[in-house]
Length: 261
Ligand code: F6R
Image (cartoon, rainbow, N blue to C red; front, side, top):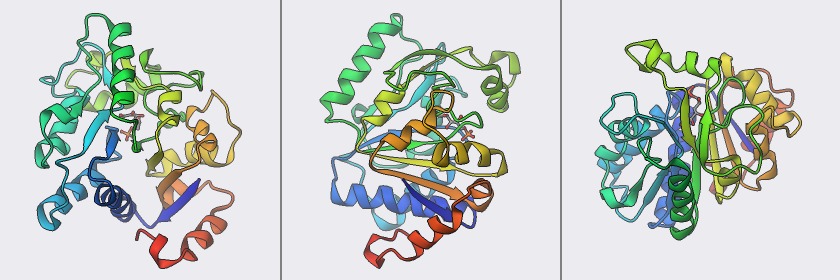
């Protein structure tokens, strides 16, 4: 794991955007896995800026979103597909047929999930998966005790995650109980993962993901089994890391061509 500690979320998001931009520059047909939630918003804002002001070209890129609420379609203001259109996809040059969403309105969810996995495979696999982190260590909506081998499927949200996501809904009771999410195994199949976490409330989860045991109780800890993971955190989210000095030293001593900042 490459742990990159930055002073604040904005600085970390600029580094994350450079990692994405470098990939898209080197591989114009890159396949991106995209997360939603509050955390990646500054990353997407910077990607939009890079597109507008520095001509970052997304015309060959394909995207797959990580998860979606069951029962919400792209017209719903709190759906994750709406979120991605608003924060990124409507603002860059990517054709609609290159954008893939978990379909919260699918009539046959198990068949849809199988087809989604097949579509990822047909696209050649995900080159870079953007991830946020739940305070309980979830990635995607793989809640604690999710199988570390899981594939795209329907999951029930924990009460804590439903509570955390109430802020996106007018009526808190409207937060769906079920979601479709890529599995931990699906995420581990991507060629690289970029996990972002900001704020003191994510510090314990980051410590567990980076320095704890690999356990289904902290699904993000499965990333320790992946050979190419960037962990981008601000000082607050890094505050519980025991070996933070080592991570800082490693990043500061990288050769310039390997740095993203
Ligand atoms: C969102 C997702 C979730 C969030 C996580 C953190 O697509 O898969 O795992 O990344 O719940 O959410 P925020 O960023 O809102 O704190």
